[in-house]
Image 1: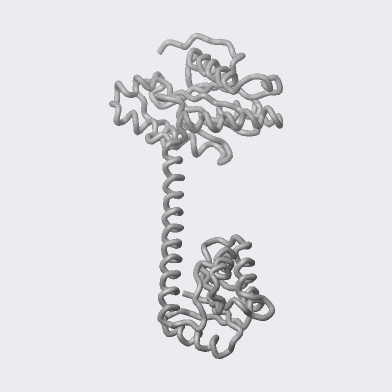
Image 2 (image 1 turned 180 degrees about the vertical axis):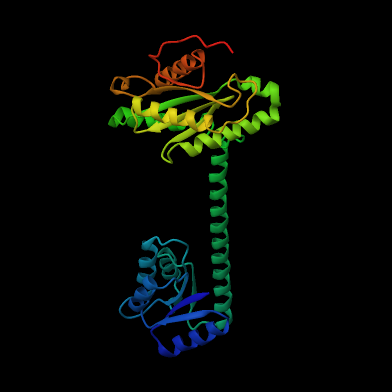
Length: 319
C-alpha cells in the first residue's frame, strides 16, 4: 500500500519512512502539509500519516482539505500528535481523522493502527467491487426483464417504456415517429404443418431479419404471438411506409419455405401509422390503433403487403 508520511521533523520522518517500508509499504514523504497537499492531488494515495503541528499547513488543515475533495474511494488518515487533552483529540477526529497516535509514539502501536486502517481500506475496496458487480447484475436483470427470451428483441414492457418517451418528444418538439405493426402471414398454419419447435425457429428468424433491416436508432419489439412492432424515429408516414416495405421485402427475399401459405414461402403483412401535428393532443395508443387497423387491411387484402389506415380493404384472393 502507498502511504503518505507528513512530518516536519527530519529524524522522525526518516524513522517513519524506514519503519513503514520495513512493513512492506511504499512510502512518500513530505516535510509539511502544503507539500503533502500538492503530492496528494497528483498521486493516487489512500493512506496518510500526518503530524498535527507543522509549518505552512498543519495536519488538521490537510485533513480538512482532503475531506472537502470528496474524492472517489476512502482516504484513511492517522494524526500524530503531542496533544493529549480529550477536547484536542476530539477536535482532530471531528476534522476528519480516522485515528491518532500520541507522541512520542510506540512503533508497535503505530503498526497496529496502520494494520487496522489497511483492513478498513481493503474492506472498502471489496465493498466497492461487490457494489459494481451488483450494479452490473441489476443492469443485466433489467435488460432481461425488457427482452423477449425467444425473439431476443424488446418485449411489450420495453415497448411501453420506449413509446411513451417517443410520444412525449414528438408532442414537445414535433419530432415525428412512425409505427409499423408486422404480422407473420398464416403463422398458425405454419405451426400446424411444421410443429411448434419449428414455429419458434421461424419467429427467431423473422426477428433477426427485421432487426438487421432497420436502423440502429430504431426500436423493435415483440407485441405478442407472431406480431412485431417497430418504432421508426424521425420519420413521417410516407417515410415509415418505405421502411415497412423494406421489411416486407427482407422477409420475402428469404424464400423461407411455408407450405401453409398460398405463396409457398414466408411473408409478412405490415400496417403503418405515424405521429403528425394533429396528434399533439392524442395518446400514443391512438397511433398504435391506426397501425393495427392498417395491419388488418393488409391481411384482409391478400397479405404480403404494406397498408396505411386510409387504404381500402380488398378481398383476399382465393388460393
